[in-house]
Image (tube, rainbow, N blue to C red; front, side):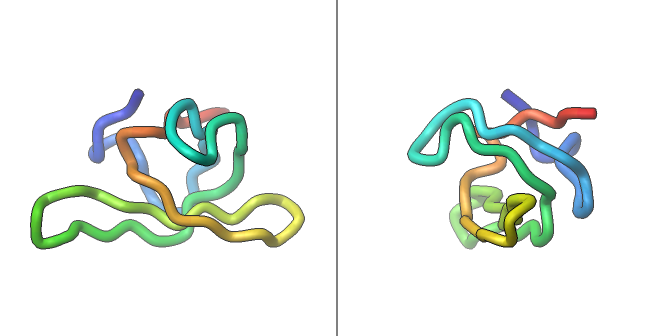
Length: 61
C-alpha cells in the first residue's frame, strides 16, 4: 500500500484493497479531507471513474 506522497496526479495505479480492489487506472484528482484521509479519483482506460482512498492503491509502471 502506498502513502500519500507516492500517489501523484496522472500516475498509473492499481487498487489493492477496498471496494475497488483489482481495478487499475490513472490518478486524476487528489484531495485531503478535514479528517486527514487522502482520497483520489481513478479513471480506468474505458473512461469509468471511481473514488478510493490513497492508502488502498499502489503505483504501477
